[in-house]
Each structure stands twice: as C-alpha cells, then as structure tokens.
Figure 1 (spheres, rainbow over the protein chains, first blue to last red):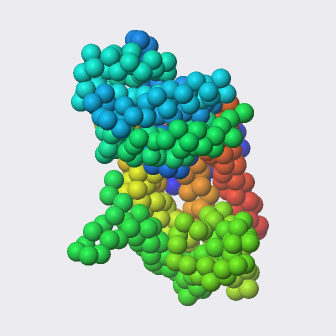
Figure 2: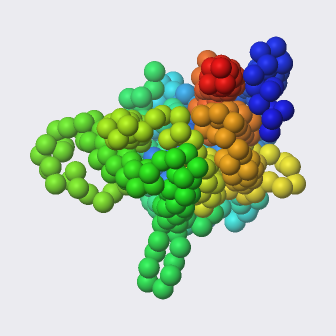
Figure 3: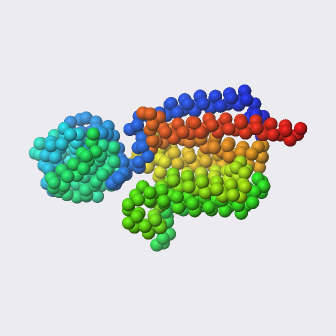
Length: 191
Length: 250
C-alpha cells in the first residue's frame, strides 16, 4: 500500500498512469461506439404498448430480407395473420386501402404471416386474391409469433417512428375507421 | 429474470426488495466504519435516514411539479405508494442537499464522512446489479458468445452478471483498503475512479445505451470524464497529504 501511496504522490509516474487510462479508455469508448439505432436508447423491447417493438428480420414473399429496425422513421402497422383465419381475411382489404392512402405519407405495413401454422401455397393465393401490395413476411420458424406473445389471430401492433408500440389490437376484424384513425395518430408524429 | 417473488398469496417485487436489502446492509457497513474515521455512528445513520426521507419527498415533489395541474386537483396523490410517480434525479439532488445540511450542522468534515460511507455504497452497487439481474434492466447487446443469455427476445451479453462480478471485485478492494487510511478521501475517490472505469468498460456491452453525438454512448463519455477527474483528485489529495505530513513533522 505504501508503494501505491508513493506512486500517487509522484507527479511524473501518476501522470503516466492517467495518460494510459485516457488512451485505453478513449480507445474503448471509440471501439464501442455504435449507430444510434443499434441500441434501444433506454427503452425495453417488449410487445406491449409504450415499449420498444422487439426487432426481427424475416424473408418476404418476394424474397427480400426485411428488418423492423431499418424502418425507423416510418409509422408501421405490424399485422400478424394466417390465411385460414376468417377475421384476417375480413380485415385485409381495409389494411390494403389504408396502406394505399397513407404509404406516401410515410406509412409502412408489414404483414407477418405465421407460416409455421400456414402453407406457402395458401399464402400466395391469399395475397393474389386480395391484391396485397405491402411486404408479406414469412415467419417460418414461428419466432416472431413467440416474441410478440401472439395469442389470437389476427394481432396488430401500431408502431410509431421511434419504434415504440403505441397501440395493440388483439383479434379482429378491425374496421377501416379504427385503422385509419389509429394510423392518423401515428402520422401526427411523422415528420 | 425473476421480477416477482411469489410466496403463497404474497407477490413481492424482487428488484425493489433487493435495493432495500442493499440499502440496509450498506447502512450497517457505513455505521460500523465510523470508529475508524472517528465519527459518531448515530450521526452517520441519522444523516443517511435524513437523506433518504428527503430524497423520497423530493422525488415525489419533483414528479408532481411536472404534472402540477393534476396534483393541484388531487393533492392526496402526493402520498400515493406508487414507485412509478417518482423523479429519480430530483430525489437524488434533494437527498444530497439534505445530507449536506445535516453534515454541516453537525460539523462533520467532508472527506472522513464520505470515506465512511464508501464501503456501504460499494455493497449497495452489488445489490443494484442483483436488482438489474432480477428485473432485466441494464441489458446487453445481442451477441453470439457462448455465455449469452436469452432476454428481451434475443441472445444478449449477460451485462447484469458482468456488472455483478465487477461490483463484487470493487467491493473486495474497498473492504481491503478501508482499514489502511493513507489519507482522507482516499477510499471514496478510489471507489469513484474504479466505478467510472467499470461503467466505461461495461457500457460497451450494453444494448440500451443512450447515444450522443451520433454514435458515442453517453454513459461512457460521462464515465470517461469522471475517471479522469477521480484519477487527478487521487494525486492532488495524496500531495496535499504529503505537505500536511511535512508541516506536522516540522
């Protein structure tokens, strides 16, 4: 302990320690720098209102990879559905219309098909039947369904431009008015 | 993650309980250290109690000020037992001011007092890590390391466990050196320096960092500055002590 005390009192040697700490600390600070959207900025990811929408990457029906966090800055309607579910069938045309009306204003619709409980052929027929133009994502492993604690078909999450869930609607079908008014609330925040 | 402890019909919020346990053990430790620094144990425990009481009141008033209209129409809500309606920063500020006023009135000198409190603070930091582990707060960035844990929908760095290990390490160091009083303020300043280094290191693995200046983790930047100040303070305190020793020997 005496040697440590002597070291503390020695201006030259302690300066070296401080400079060393500044260099190592500064390098670590620089090495661990990340883009702002790589962290949750203090928010907890959880599939609940007021929480950050848990991130996922899924392949779309057209073969593109879509990552939720890449959509920051846009208002998002995240709809979890299956082709065999009647309320999903009932609400899909309304979703398509709301998407068409608001896409240019910064609305994105991500329709995540619970492919683990569906068949690809049925999904393709469904999309063709309703002329859906937004991305259809395929949850082949069922991971997104588990992460989003899906309990009923369909479930819809309204996510604002910061990636925070503003509203969750479990079950359906949603009326076009409900959809449009909720989207309008999300849109108020879109620059 | 076990945020709720279920004992029969009783559901206890574990993170809060852990923080209380940390506070209690920390206070005990601080009181036991009073003899070393020639302080009155009663004064130290009174100071901690005053700071806590003032801190809770300050935290609630700070919160109420933000929603003044609501609280003016329902003033009884000021007494609500709801932990979510407390403002942390205001609470800490008011608590610190209360502690300083008490210390001033009792004529407690600053450096021996904070040295006495340091082992308690250090142990409290261990319980903060345990509370984080229990609630899932302060979580890590997604990773593929074999020791990753699944939390908040991804395999992540177990930052709460890193935090626990480092806080325990720092406490072991503090408990070792608290008996060797090389100069006043040594124990506290060393604790601040070690804690700043620890946070600077740990924050790099976090998944919930606040980002400033485009890509810098805010907590790292603050820790970096605190670390430099604490390291310089250690030197200044050691030098002053040397001069004092010279003067007394002359």
